[in-house]
Length: 260
Image 1 (cartoon, rainbow, N blue to C red):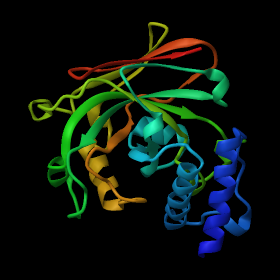
Image 2: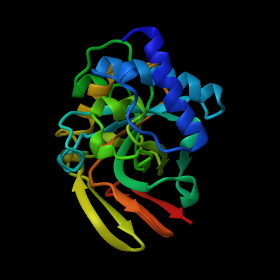
Image 3: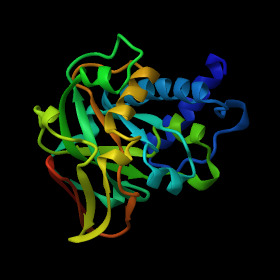
Image 4: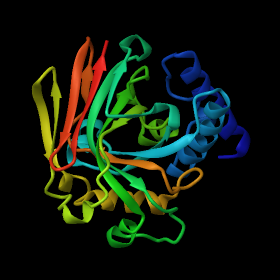
C-alpha cells in the first residue's frame, strides 16, 4: 500500500475516533490487505491521534492470544494495538458509558518494560530480560464498529484492535518467583464471576505473547516504561448498563472499573 493510501486510511480512522463516530469498513482503495498494511496504517493513526490531543503512545495491547478470544473473534493469530498515556489508569477508575459505543472488559496479565526491545529476535527466555514488573490488568475495549464480525483482522488491527483504555494494579517486581502459567484470572461483574482462565492460556505463557510483540516491533517500537497487555484469559464481557467490573489475577492483585 502506498503512502497516500495509508494516509487516507489513517485520516478516516482518526476522524471517526476524534468525532466519536462508529467506523465502518474502509474504502477498497485504502483498506488493508495484509498485516504490513494494517500496521503501517496504525502507525500513522497514532501520529494523527497524538496530534489531536489523545496522548502519546505509552504501551501496547495484544489481542487474540488465547483460545477463548480466538474463538470469540474467529481470528487465529495475535494482533497488536497501541495504548496512550491518557488511557492508562492505576488501580480503580470510573468510565462513562456515554463515552463509548459498546464497552467491554478483559482480564489480563500485564508487564512494564524495564528496557527497550532492540536486540531481537526474542523468545520467551530472552524477552523476560526486558520485564521490570508484572501486574494484574483490565483492558477496556470499545466496539466502535458498524459490524465487527464483517471486518478482517487487518481492518481491526489498523484501528488498534478495539482498544479504548486500560487499568492496572500493583506492580510485582519479584515476578520470577511466580509461575505465570498457573496464575488464575477471573472477571466479575457486580460481584458475579462471569469467566475464568489461567496465564498459560496466553500462548502457553504470557511472555510468548510479549516475545511475539517484540519481534513484530510495531510503530515506534517497544521502549522502557511501556506497559504491555498480554491478552485476555476471559472472553470479553460487554457492559451495557451501569456496573462494577473487577478483574483478579491470583498472586498479583485486583483492579476495579466502575461504569456509570
